[in-house]
Image (cartoon, rainbow, N blue to C red):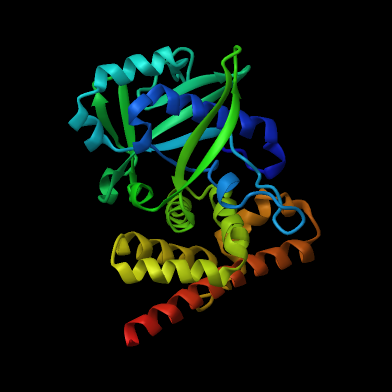
Length: 304
């Protein structure tokens, strides 16, 4: 579930998601190195809390991981994967008690908190986005997400320590998660598709606090663009940021749905109008400046 406001999220639930992620890695065994974390848990690692300079991220209620189905197929491990998931404490998610169970969403009980884990898979075809692809018939599937494979190439690593439930002990695992460029790209595209407040807030949080400056993130984008890899995904994401956050003739950027979603997620829709408008202007201005910096750096590289 994606809540509408930051106040509905809490640190305990986010920690439960982290425990579920570690349990998932252990369930995947030798295949865990091919998993990539994306979604709302990623800012916990991209922008570690350092008050007051870097406030704590709102958190998340679920875990999104990108699978590499090509690798899974090559290793012929379908039956083993299904068995390991069940042995690791995962059960198929049933959204409606009277309805069917999901093949791409699984649930892990993290000390009394049920956490939904969603399996995602790359597609570069917009028409296939949100459609399921089978890994093992009806038992294990993944939901195709546009350009999700960017996280396979561009990711960071971090070793984390958690206490597994049911006296499972203290364990260490290395997680691999979308780096700042991949995360912004995927979140920008996600917001453009479903217009969730949380997506807008997540990408703005990373824009504000990753690496200490917007300029540093713009430099990372320009360096990636120079390689030519995933340039279609980046260009599409930059265009959606401009469309949803920035000025255009007749429409001030701060009045668009991107800045409004961020302000509303943080409860400002009921705040003093001046405070709300100031935040929306700040968000629109920051995204506009980021895009300007990327364009300028890109132009400098092209001129060399």
